[in-house]
Length: 376
Image (cartoon, rainbow, N blue to C red):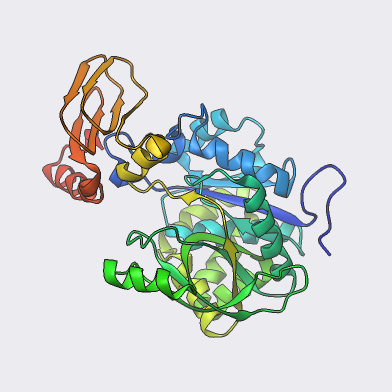
């Protein structure tokens, strides 16, 4: 039976928000100094980070969310979530991928609460049906109490090729988590043909990168697969709440930390040994990975129209569809173009189509090679 704290939230549960990455497919809107989680991409009036935090408070309770982010983003994160205290912000010296971000937070929290259950949720995802989200997380917490590492897989709405997939197997038989199924395997982003087969099969879910587990179970799984990295993380966690000792430890250990995604370091090995379960998430979800996704968020029921986001100037449209994001004072006119993407910033202009939105990363790579890093 799920234990609920008197004020609000699931007892013994602590949420973690890894807030890293630039989101290069959203350039020139998303930059190193203003990554996508610090933008309002939905028109809700909230940044993606703030919306994520607000979504987690009813689950974890006030004061039980930790944000892991880069040193350069500390001020922006604090401005977005003034409720965070110093103990709830973990600053990375430089990005070391998701394993370090999640495992370090889990190790710190385990030293504060030995029996804590942690849940990691990306800072830049969009979820509208929060009631269904809370139900899925609740089941995942029950599976975590039973000793599993749990993830939430999104029921596919289309044969998307931009997401990894999770193949669900038999029921895990966990009381309080009737939807939880043993994970058969994680699979990489498929071709269009394979994605259609996955959706038709019915056993495959989108991998949304949400992980819920007892902190000790998560860290033990990491120690089995990556013992050196696990030892380094434990050494950092041991001094994290002692500022005088933390700095020297970070300077010494951080450059040695292996860059590896938690899917490879923990999730896939756990699935191979039968210790991983997936809870289906029957709610709308998007990782807003490119401008095509942003356009879908805004067009929705108004397909065939042009969505306009953040206009500071004037946007004039005639027989056009897609999205225009305007951050300059220029007049932007779009005439007779379907599925267009226009992103106008003071120092860079992007023009493409929703069909080619994934290729924006190649533009970023070209800009980087040119040496014009100020634009990134």
